[in-house]
Amino acid sequence: MISNPGTEASSPDIATRDQGEPTAVLAAAERSLMSDPGHRGRFAEFGGRFVPESLIPACEELEAAFRDARIDPHFTQRLSHLLDVYAGRPTPVTPAPRLSAELGITLLLKREDLAHTGSHKINNVIGQSLLAQRMGRTRLIAETGAGQHGVATATAGALLGLDVTVYMGEVDTARQELNVFRMELLGAEVVPVTTGTRTLKDATNEALRQWVSRTEDTYYCIGSVMGPHPYPWMVREFQRVIGREARQQCASLLIRGVPDVVVACVGGGSNAAGTFAGFVDTTTRLVGVEAAGGAAMTDGSVGILHGFRSQVLQDEDGQIAEAHSISAGLDYPGVGPEHAALGGSGRAEYVTATDEEVVEAVVRLARAEGILAALESGHALAWILRAVASGDITPGSTVLMTLSGRGDKDVSELRKRVGT
Ligand SMILES: *Cc1c(COP(=O)(O)O)cnc(C)c1O
Image (cartoon, rainbow, N blue to C red; front, side, top):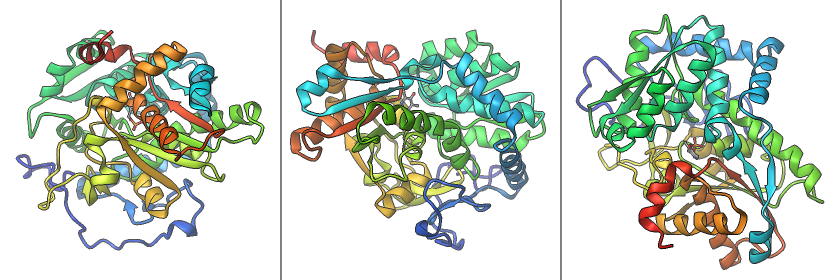
């Protein structure tokens, strides 16, 4: 978080422990799950708005603008039009017949890899960029780790004629040179961040800091269900299209109408949140799969990071731990607050997959179905394979997995690890 951006530059990523704000005012059961978290933006005791005073008016203005836009037919029609004609929605649900036969289940894949730019991230950035335009902003800023959200934001900026500046940890700019160039090709400026560990959490701190200093013309486009209220709610709503479509598609594909299990990978948790939103009111089992090296739900504790309270990977002093996994898109040391609440209430389960399991799962899917999935998405499949083997998923079950992105970006990483 940035509790005091002017003076805390040397250690901006310290996760402040509970600061005595009233908590747990909204028992999860009092509100229907995955609905409007209210003006305080709470998901049970998680979420909220832990930002410097100077950023409160900008958050409030954003919340008001989003509340207004989401019920304005001009906005919702423009958004769904762009999602259709530009982003390529609806994305199909593809049965995986050969893998299904091998596993003794019915496996369905929600194909976000087929969306423009190759992942679900475009759903959110088009929504937020339209909102920025509606608010009269001319400039988008974004944080990025591996570069995927930066590329998506640069894309939406080009589409709508908005300037784009992307903050990226210096270490990541070196690791992801090609994505830096992709953003530049799309007309964005990429700013290397040299504070802290020079990775995603530092880039996020820097983007928040830049937003504080320039809210008049600048819109901060956050890449997942994280950040201060209204972001976790707003990003989930922009990703809800995944779950809404999948629910309809399952209704026509499955006898029971809904799958027995819905599985998605979790970095910040946006593709999972969008997917779960379509099924949370059913008896379908919801499973989120984190990277074993960055499992905030499994290994984290309650803390505050980047303006919200959630499960966070931190040491005893509240110092943020580095997340490490084969897929840079899951290397976020926290998880969206709504997932912390869904896990706490038991409505969703959170599990992990290791790098080795992920590589095996991605290769198996490629060879069985001709679909090269992103390593992030491979986590969801890795857990499915393990759960079928252990009997946690019973034979004959129907399983819907969100395939969050395509694997082209991961080919060189796979090449290092796969013997052909
Ligand atoms: C960024 C990314 C993720 C992780 O982000 P979430 O907010 O957890 O969805 C997962 N899959 C792909 C392909 C990504 O690019």
